[in-house]
Image (cartoon, rainbow over the protein chains, first blue to last red):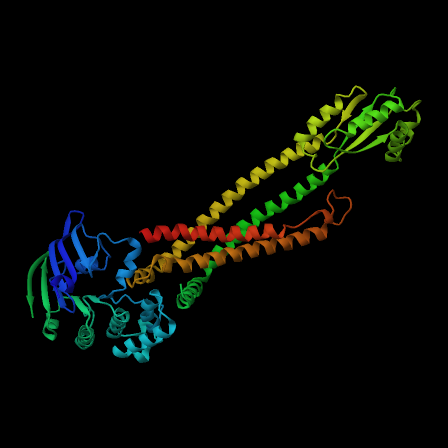
Amino acid sequence: MTMEAESVIRMFHVHKRYGSQIALHDINLNVMKNDFVFITGQSGAGKTTLLRLLFLDEEVSEGQILVNGIHLQRIRRAKIPFLRRNMGVVFQDFRLIPSYTVYENVALVLETAGQQTRYIKKKVRQVLRMVGLEDRLHTYPPRLSGGEQQRVAVARAAVGNPLILLADEPTGNLDTAAADMVFDLFRQLHTRGTTVIVATHDCRLFEKVQGRIIELNRGRVESKHNI
Amino acid sequence: MNFTTLSFIFQRVRRNISTSPYLHLATTATIAFSLLIIGAFGLIYVNINNLIRSWQDNIRVVAYLSDELPQGSRERLQQRLAKLYGVGNIRYISKDDAMDRLKRQMKHRLSLLEGLRENPLPASFEIRLVQGWQSWDRLDPLVDQIKAFPEIEDVECGQAWLRRFSQFIAFFKLASLIIGVLIAATTVFVCTNTIKLTLYTKRQELDIMRLVGATDTFIQTPFHIQNLIEGLLGGLIAVGVLFGTYRLFISKVQSPHLFLSSGEISFLSLTACGVLLSVGMLMGWLGSCLSLKQFLQS
């Protein structure tokens, strides 16, 4: 199998500017299938921007991005939702819908994809069991702890069996025990074949998995190395 | 779109309405109020139009004959008149018949007629028109044709006031149309802003839906359905209030002295009610389309 065939994400000379401010400068990146990649760097280094470019929450100013062979700069607006269904995204602030129960938050992904009710029920229970929240199906997110909310977010990201899992500072708001629990879930998903990209400045996480670290500094790649 | 998606969409409609009921009540009330005004104009227009039509149906042309016209000539004239396009029934009113009719009409003031030495009233033909010839553009040329007969001294086609009244009604119709369009536009504007308020309160939820792969159609459909329901409800309320007011009005209009009798006042037809409901739904739908377009582009 060629390297091209195994590439899940490729970035070619990607630049991102907000007015005169440079957020990313000449980023070249190749993420292979089932890679575990950490994007690290200080606040303002461009970690979040890089992830947002990948799930098309932002558009590049210059350069090209290919996700699973799809050219993001040429994708039609109507096709974006279908691209996003191949990705699970976890945010630092969880981004759960407070008026939806835990079950409804997770099921939303499958409902938008038009899955059958029976499948949705089975799959959501299965994923919530995996994150240890099967008994909190009908609880609303504001009644959960930070760690539990992030596990719901991971369940939501995982329920659609995505090819890629993107996590933006997923442990930033959690204590050590909760952070470890969430990171264990990432490892489980990685073991099942998901490509995981985690943007974090929590160096403690690097010891927990074999992967690659890409360090950003003021929007430029400072270093790349394997761990 | 499968059953799961449909059921989820209707769940969201229920959730949207139950989380901000007053906002949706305000939209429904606005639509109902504007449809009530539009419907009231329609009701007035329909009834006045019916009244004018019934008056127009009774329009007759009276052709006055010269006193010296012998009977044979009169009969030939009647045959020639009957051949004109638009002429229906022709009735001959002799001088004596005309006097008898006048006496019947003036039965309380007969003394006014006592001093007359001879009958001053001319004989005439009362010409009724065939169906469809009562419109002014057809009537005027026919009157000109009748006037052209030398045996006819004068032609009277009263109802000049009716013509002026019809012109006023045409103006009323135009004014109602303009007011109706303005009210509808205002209602669409209100609906647009109500949906915008809902969208802002649900911005986080909708952003998350987009992030997890919801299509624009999936996001928009509940709002369209919700506004269609509000439009339909507003329409039903407007038709209900109009019908109640109509029933109340006709129960009061029983007096024979009024120029309208209750039997002559009709309510909007089923088709017109259907149109009113459709307009309500259309206003709601347009409101959601405009606000969602702006929101999804932002």
